[in-house]
Length: 276
Length: 276
Picture 1 (cartoon, rainbow over the protein chains, first blue to last red):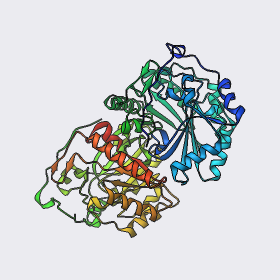
Picture 2: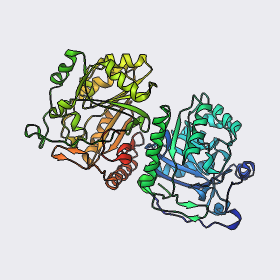
Picture 3: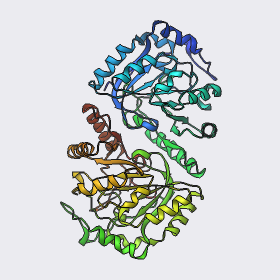
Picture 4: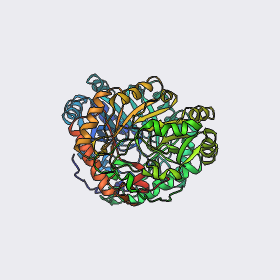
């Protein structure tokens, strides 16, 4: 597996302080959809999914470039910020599948569509062509841009962003994402929890979508890249697990037995490295 | 959560060396079934499940005492060896449920039936009475003693023991366990993997039960108690995660994309402690 690490070199124009400004998804989406191609930040694997209901499951990651959010603690800024755009490739669905199959040895595999926000890319043809070759698809998005083609996925992971992210939730858009998955893919919610406010937000999310299983994910206090520049390659495992124990105690005390609490497995195993 | 640690004081008559001898499950089972009561080692929680398909799920553990196996690396010898029998309580299903509900605040909860080997206990009335109160039940067993009441479970985790355990697999019994779950509970296989031989065994298990999802669990090289006496309270996280990376590399190289590879979450979070 490629574990090379790229450092973030932030430009002044994109430094974020305080409440982040949201990007217009239409601007980001049209660039690629005009050409029928998909903006790709990286394709890597096989490795295992590190988060949510598919934790531990072998997968090839297809990470798209571009995002309508600017989360304070984003750990994949190299797939978000426009100054990394020259690192992104415009690829056709066929070219993406060729790379997936090179990595999987042409064996059908779970493809994890991540970002950035993959929902702003025109992914329907990729899913359709991939399904024909036996691949299955999981997509993770913050749920800000609903798409009818979500119904063609095997898994839709909706990860609305809590207060610590600095982003506001568009509840109507999130509602539409949940509806887009009805009768189609397995749908799950995932909320990153750093603190009490995030935990309260997760409770709110769970009350709004009682039929959708929810995963609470311990926030990573030391990501690879930060808005202020390079972060820590070595993960602070002790701090992560301390926060995990706190989260389990909260869930237990509140008798919130429908939630699932998990750390990021890939961070425990490989630290804050790319490509794993 | 109770994290008190009991030390193993092995008696000479039960020290195990080389290939372990198996205990007769009938002998162990009849003692409790005669009284209609269940031999209990410990009841604790709520905490989260640390293994397999329910990893991260809040649960109350009901650990039974007594086992027909003597695995070399068993990490719950206090629920296995007869010299701990005086620590075990004979409890009625009603008494067990009272304790579960004290811990859960009377909120319906996932009850994890573990051991020892819980399959040698008369658990059908407990499951039936618990279901009426809204509780769900997951049972984990090595699959050496099939029971018709497995069909009443919500989850049946079959954990046949690999070569490193020193135990032989009774394939016919395991077949019957899988059949007992047909049409009833979710069924999953879990195989502990320490080394290449264990990995080859897991591949064999997967080929025999192609319809049952399989979870590969990284062996814990430093359990709390060992057959030779006290082990390590502090888990060797670095060694665990090194073995996990090795396991992921194996799965990826073999394109074994149906398997799920996981460490023991509770060991990462709490070390080799009891009651978590």
